Image (cartoon, rainbow, N blue to C red; front, side, top):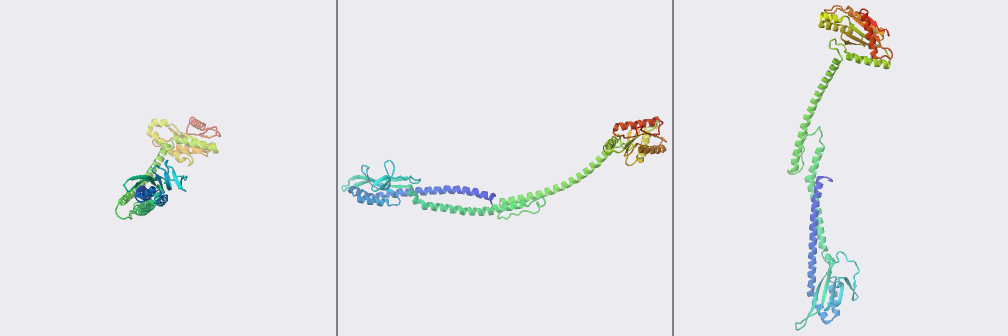
Length: 436
């Protein structure tokens, strides 16, 4: 039960009970001590009548032997530690046991004399006394003061008188304390400790999978606050169970929505990438995509070696076609040429619209001769095709291959120069750059 609520309550209750018991016991001890002290004082007071006449007669007759015997008898009493007799002038006549002098010093009678008591006084050695005048009454009724006798006692004598009563009080308090301790221990453990332990074990077995599956039943008699707490605990478990189920369903729904959104985003991203890299009219790569391909292939050749060739294509007299038949017919011509280029190029080639009526074919792992042969095949297919409305059309081709250490910009300049020469030399030609 260390650290439990029941043990803590038990410690608090018995801490308070112990303090109260201690206070009551101390009050009982103090009352018993005071009662015994008053009783001893009364007994000493009664000695006036018991020993007073004998002491007075011995003093009147100057009978020292009788006086000494009486003092010895008084000293032998359990409540007396000493007795002394003085004459009417205050001169000490006889003493027995421990007495005090005029200055309050403790003195001990030894061999007919008083010597100082050298023993250090203890906590309970405080001396208290009661003095009586010795008055002789003669036959004529005259009263004659013949001296004074004093009886001494101490706190230690009082303690000896009450020690048995003290022991009974202490034993009684200890027995009551222990009995109540075990009674309260049993009751608190049964009424509080065990129910709380049941609750703790029930809560400790709960997890996300079994919460709310079964109700907790408190095994305790009666109907009290812990039963109300049990009801609330079961209500809370049921509420949590429903919340967990709702959250699980919501989480599953969110997962489905998330997967749907991810799929839609992936599709949209793919579509955007395709649109961003595709010419909307012809369906071929656009200028941006061609730039990416050219950059990639140029870096590949410069790093790992190999060949790279570029074919630039321009539709001959395309402006005249637009001016004669209109832009819709021109667009149809562009689309038809793009279709021939797309189907005629190899799978490793990248075909795109370079701008306006110009197209480009990027030929990886191909030298200038291979690219020129491909260009010639494409030229022939275009020249043999019948275009809607516009009839026959031709194209001019400029071919250039990447030279060792050459930049991409210079390669494109050479391809453009070759195309320009093809147009200058009568169009419908394939011109290979002179460097290659």
